[in-house]
Image (tube, rainbow, N blue to C red):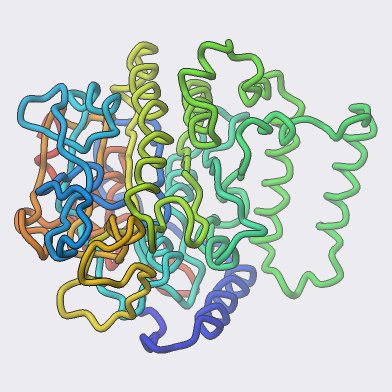
Length: 481
């Protein structure tokens, strides 16, 4: 499957047009056909569920999980000397240090595998949602078909763990009313697999219960009648020719699944109001923190894949283009307690061994380099200066794809283990065991019991779980490897 050529200078609107074309093509697509079972050997799963903690916007590895030489703010100091703006701190593993501000995560690093050598391709132009599309699907956009999200692959190949709880749930990311929303919607989908394998989206975890109950004031009988009427509308759509029979039936099955959940006593799993005040406070009073708590409950009750995000909004959160250090302090506070609490709670409930928890971002950040050394990608930093003259200059502002950190807990991974390394001096590129997105996905898929070579035929062409079926799992990170 060859992607449509994309000129690095191509306007964003053209990129959107091609994404829209792929989405329309998905509506017309016939049922994808799986390769013969004997043709693909599925590995033995080490995990039953996966939680992806998504740091949307570009989490700077040197200011989180891969500390380098610390440079405090000193007016007039050369920016070229700025590698990390937080000092390193000890963790529960003597040989592993991470950055100040992540003290709670440091206490659970003895349960983690830390990959410090993830790399992303230089796509010529750096658009966050484009790199996020690549990370979440394994394919560089735009594609001639709608590529399924990582979670959709798990929902399709593995099916639900609990027939009532959606297999794929997306928490914390608004898909309306934020910048690049159309691009985000392009990969937050079941793709050509169909609507039933797409995500249940819960942008505000504290309101998740509202998504699984009939509208206020509507009695169950009237709600059931409305459901039946809506199903009839879809089934008798006068524009049936704009959607294949497979996609229509997939949409109807998605509606039936939603109705089953709304009618089930298990819907209470979504109600964070049932948690104690102490538990909710332990996870932090933020959307991300409450999202981690909701993810814990959902996995405990049978969700297959849950993504929790700090939410990607251009120029907010991890997307630092100025005032990088102060923003990073805020992001440390937002993720530190919830992540540590999630790991401890899963462990206490004896779920961690079979739940793969992944912390990841689309790329890292550097003070000087955009993309990779030698890239001609446009520099988008708002803090351009050769010296530290103001606090806004202090921090890592430029997108860096040459070396990124990924943290993995549970799910059959080694404990207290570091894989790969980046250089200690700029450029901070991966110098040991570089890990591509295809290989990272192969590792995640393998842990979940899915071969990286799993293939579906769509529009008479093969489409693989990893690009061209070339992804190779990192055996060294598995506890039994």
